Image (tube, rainbow, N blue to C red):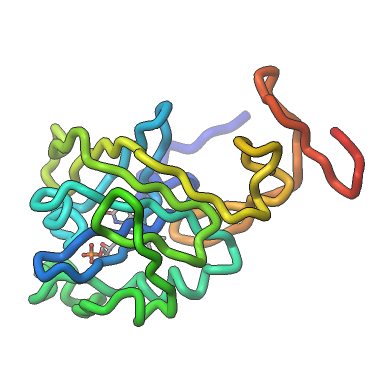
Amino acid sequence: MQTLEIRPKILYYGTPVALIATANEDGSANLAPISSSWALGYTLVLGIGASSQTYANLVARPQLTINVPSPALVEHVERLAPLTGRDPVPAEKQAQFRTERRKFEAAGLTPLPSLEVLPPRVAECPLQFEAVVSALRPLADDGFAAIVEARVLRVHAHAEIVAEREHIDVAKWHPLLYVYRHYFGRGTYLGRTFRAETSYVVAGRDR
Ligand SMILES: Cc1cc2nc3c(=O)[nH]c(=O)nc-3n(C[C@H](O)[C@H](O)[C@H](O)COP(=O)(O)O)c2cc1C
């Protein structure tokens, strides 16, 4: 296989979109899309830009909700994309972003009170996690972003994606993927790992 050495501006090869809700200093909620996240047990590791309102809120009030949208919510996500809760807009964002403090309204999304943390959940997102910050540190090589460890306290899922009480029904759950700044839905089913505890069932057929 021939390869080319290239230097793309970004390395975002494809991860699900998540909407992070945090508490502003006045008690209102901020909401921002991210795609830098992954799960290690009940910890979600997030990459958060240091000039964002999300970062400032997490440092001051270390509670959050992580809400995972389905492909049906892509337009709501993109409505949030050019917004920041920061006022004034940070210098590096000034050409493309504007300040918006009422993010839920701007996105056309519904805040749902959380059970254990201050920031609300996003009612329309099929997966909603309530979490507290357990660690936060700037990137070692560059202060443009921070690594945030979020310990998940509670998991909420839309009833239609829950199977056998404690599992996510992978035939019904579709994340929204962010691939080199483009949005995709999920592809076709390819199989399961040897440790999968559930089946992929479509139209009554177990695979
Ligand atoms: C699909 C998508 C994925 C994004 N991923 C991230 C990310 O992983 N981390 C991050 O800090 N910003 C990410 N951003 C950019 C933030 O959403 C943006 O900086 C926003 O202004 C932050 O809002 P805030 O300042 O109100 O917190 C992403 C934006 C979009 C649209």
